[in-house]
Image (cartoon, rainbow, N blue to C red):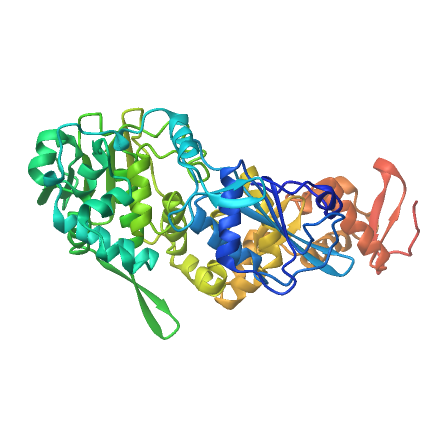
Length: 545
């Protein structure tokens, strides 16, 4: 998580420039302008966009009403820019100050907003100069997809695939001028062909079958449907050796042919949830196309079974990516391909496709992606489609889609961990405060958190909450009093009371005893190890200090 510890006083003294941008925005601020500022901050090493403080020195806090739902704005910025964004909200002398903190761009990849990488030249917001872009691309070494295939020509590209891309780019950008461009100019504008020739990205995305067979035969994707776990020929198999835009929709059609519905009762209504979520499957395929190693032999395999789908791609994880950081670090192996898919809108949350896969799996109460079998040569991702707990669906529906839309991936993972009674990873703990403020999570003491009682009550499962939390405080007190009263005049030592509630620590028991004594229900005689506790209706109260 970001969450730099900064105060309003420190912001008032900070120097505006590449790391800090100040906007008065007393009433509102255009969201696209904010995204461009955040884009430039990310490209300049990360920084803070501050609303409600003047940019002229001496700075003053004027307060801002901009972005009254900062959590939602934060999520939109993350989707638009492909980098981590966090926010802090201050109330300073009765005035609201909102700070968005933007992480630095990933290594080797400039951040873009609507296809333009923005940059700060001093205090001026400008499109990033081409020389700076080239230096950034060079940070991680060679981008194979941006290299030139010296023998390829424009005739090797498929017009149908190019027109599908054009339609998608127009739809994503809203720029109808793109319809007037020739195919060659269109591909030049998105930089898949250059003055030097045709890039491998152009072949992978738009190439004809013959051209790919000649220049890049390993770029194919093979789909198989297997009705059982038995080895041998697949029940159905199709091989795709052509430009990706020409067959992308066909892949989903094949998978959807055998996409069973799972029925879930919600009150009087029956809700159907497909085994294979379309957005999850499309993101998994796009991930394989963007990140596979095209210089290795071997094809991308998509193997569909009745209840799961496995995507295997050559090359292992890109440099710097591990299972531990896969949700918050970006390192596209084929940057040119990633940029084109982002321009076309196929990647809805470019750079965060894996986050979307995790989030949708959780909201459908399905298992998280399984990377068993992944090694340095291959990535294997299994998407299990079966709902593992329909009770969790009830809890998810109670939270509501509107609130889900404002949640980060960390929030989704926290809710999943709490529901399944797993320990909370350290990197997720900073999000607990937000979920408590939203009424989703309760703190029950000593670093323990649970989903709120209200959630379980609303779905008719209050007993589940009680089991997770354990006996409530009043019940614990009643058990202690009952045990002490049962011992009558002989009294009860502390060591025996500890046995009544074995899940509680000595200090927790002592707190309960003090509360009961204060309420006049029990008293103590003696000191230290010889002390004995009595119920007030058994023996006259003799206080011991």
